[in-house]
Image 1 (cartoon, rainbow, N blue to C red):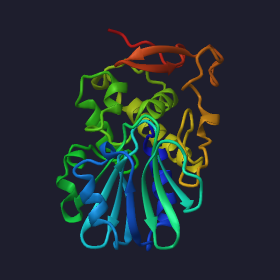
Image 2 (cartoon, rainbow, N blue to C red):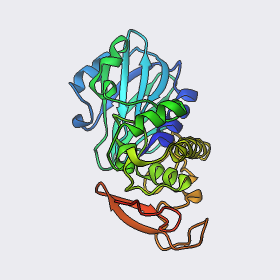
Image 3 (tube, helix red, strand yellow):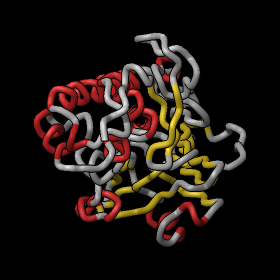
Image 4 (cartoon, one colour):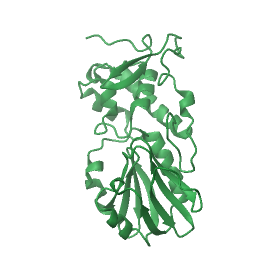
Length: 275
């Protein structure tokens, strides 16, 4: 699933391309991608202009004139592609925004888990998909981060990935952040010392910023708005590196399951916590 860096890269790509563009019509090939009535989407958007694009957690929020916003969640395999209207129609293209400029904004999704929905712009904070989200990992301060995590007795990796705790982290960046901070993913958050939590805050923000600078990570199907692949997978230190040497101590990386998710770590640099 695209995580914070990948969604941020999509948002930045859209911001450069669609702001000021006017929608002529909308073609929907798969109704279930649209939450609510697909007829509302196709009926309310023609004639409207894209005004802004931003991110909240893993959600893309596209503001339109007339007090409406379009919420999009890419989920596992969703892609938003900026294409010429004459570009061949790729398989799994489910929604097409036909723009007055002759361009298309197309939504592709092989596994069909993603969704989009219209909402009132001045009530976005009340939307259930937004109201439940925790603070942004790149915005939360160090002291607030430490206080937030120390208040929980849960294992630290599932806690980091809980969108109600922090909005945007997923499997890749939780593994990479915990490795840099030398914290075992099974450690109870409430038992991690303040020094290590400070280190984790720094590591998390460094990893996320580096990933954004590398256009995200492409480990399966993630693509940017121009179809470009991310490059941060070339800089992974533990994620998806089972049996390869730890870049710090050279011991082989191992893979375990934490909270039902495959988890990569170094058994020497990230010691098993005491019970």
